[in-house]
Length: 208
Image 1 (cartoon, one colour):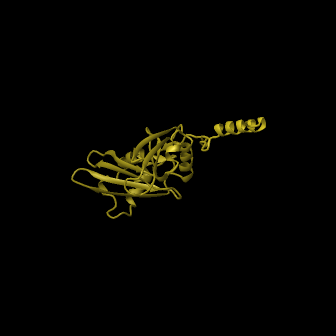
Image 2 (cartoon, one colour):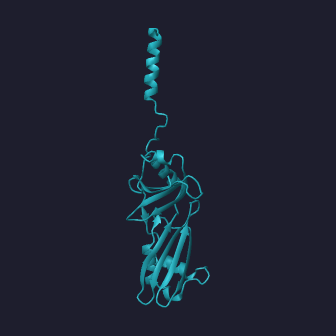
Image 3 (cartoon, helix red, strand yellow):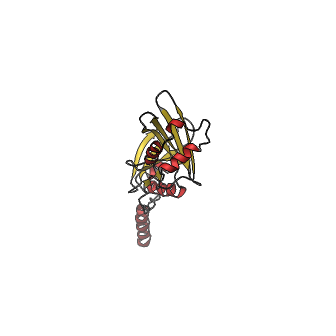
C-alpha cells in the first residue's frame, strides 16, 4: 500500500506533467500593415534610361517621357521606398522591345527585377514578369515570427528559410521559402504572410 503522503505527491506530479506543453508556440507578433507603393516619377525613369550603363543601354525609340511615365506607374517597391541603386537595359525586335528594370537597397536580402514589353509605335507598356526580393531583414524576421506563432509553426520548426520574395498589390504577400536542405528531394514548404493582416497560409508543399 502506498502511504497517503506519497500518493498525494504522485497525483500532483502526474497532474503537473499532464498539463505541461513541451513546445509552446511563441506569442503572435504585433503586426503593422506594410504598404507597397510607386516611388518613382517619369523624370527619374527617363534619366535612368538615358544614363544606363548596361551593355547596349536602352534603345532610343523607347526613351520617351510617356513610356517612362508608364514604367514608373507600374513599378511597385516594398514599403513604397525608392531603391538606392537602379539598373535599366533593353533591346528591340521588329515591333516590340523588352525592358528590364532592377533595383535594391543596402542591407536587404535581394533585388527587385521588373520586365516590361514596350511597343514603340503605340507606346503601349505591359508587365511581362516581376521577381521581387528587396525586403528588409527586420521584416523577414517579423514574418518568420508570425509563421512560428501560427498553426504552421510545427511544420517549419526544423526547416530553414532559403529565400524570401514578395508579391505587390493586389496580392500583397511575403513568401518565405522553407527548406530542409539543398539536395534534390528535400522538403519544401512555401508559406505566405499577408502584408496587411499578418495572416499566414501554406502556399506550396513538396517532398515533405
